[in-house]
Image 1 (cartoon, one colour):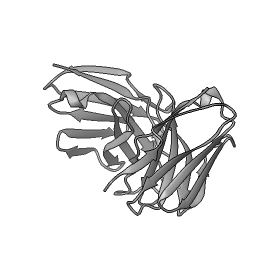
Image 2 (tube, chains in turn red, brown):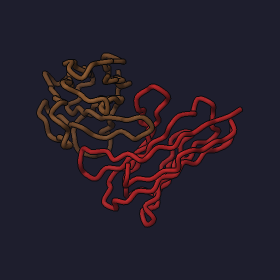
Image 3 (cartoon, helix red, strand yellow):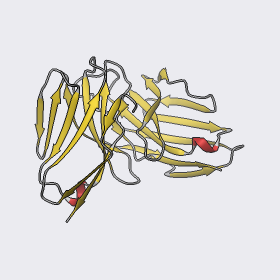
Image 4 (cartoon, rainbow over the protein chains, first blue to last red):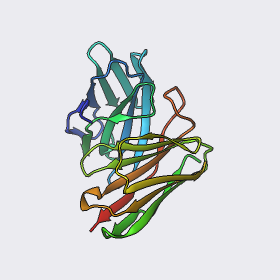
Length: 110
Length: 116
């Protein structure tokens, strides 16, 4: 995770939008991913974006990629209590190795 | 069925014990992975198997020994571990290796290992 940085914590009210940010360092990354990890559970792939895209939308999730600034974000619309978890961004560059970010703990309160 | 199954869910072992973690998938995937995740840290890659052959070993100590008996199974044999090896061990699989669209990596729920 040393090359992929995320803010540690985010707290939002139910129904609001959440934006989780990620900064990566390897400009040759080809795919960037967002994973969700609930307490005591494994990793669930939420979405991914190819490096030649700027944006990808999938239902309540919107991924934005700024390659110039090496910045990736995940927006969750209408955040629900079930969205409370740790969110990891991850990068890869034509290898089988995923480099995970430090993780952002999202807490949703009523 | 998009499931990677890991057993056991919890394991406590002494430093002189020999134990194994098991992973199974029936999605026809030909790439399987072991990741290690310490508390409050991101997962870190340990091993990659591609078509039942070890393709990546991230300089993992030899007290961890992976084995891929067939395309559906992946084991991690543990021997003479240290307390600092206590962590969540995650197995994952994907259709094949190499990063490309549709080659989603699916993770299991993990095995919580405590070394005493």
